[in-house]
Length: 132
Image 1 (cartoon, one colour):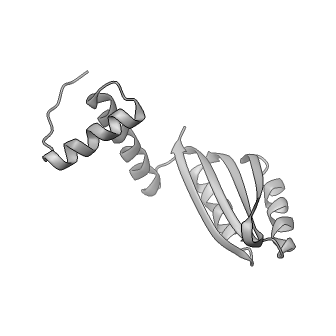
Image 2: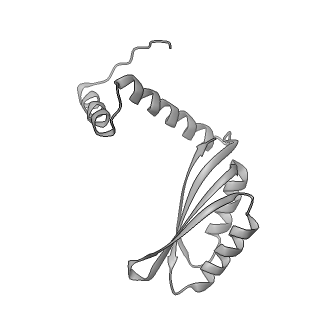
């Protein structure tokens, strides 16, 4: 491996050392390598150069809106080649949470997310993606 040098102010270094201890990294170098990989992956995905990704898509809606569940089921079947798993959770105050796991091309994942967002009655959609 190539050795590089970075400069951090004392406050940032203290926070980094706390993170290393909390997460169990064996060294500062290991933590910085992990951070750089995450940073580059997120940058490439946002730039549209994601290629194949694995994504979690989190969807929240009101329980009373039963048609949302039906429409999500239709989308899961329509995107059967992309959606590899899902979980349905009942939340307090009459809300449901659906978590979809998708694996495939970034462009197709974005299409699915857009279709989910277009469903009337969906309150929030959040997603994370990592390159495969």
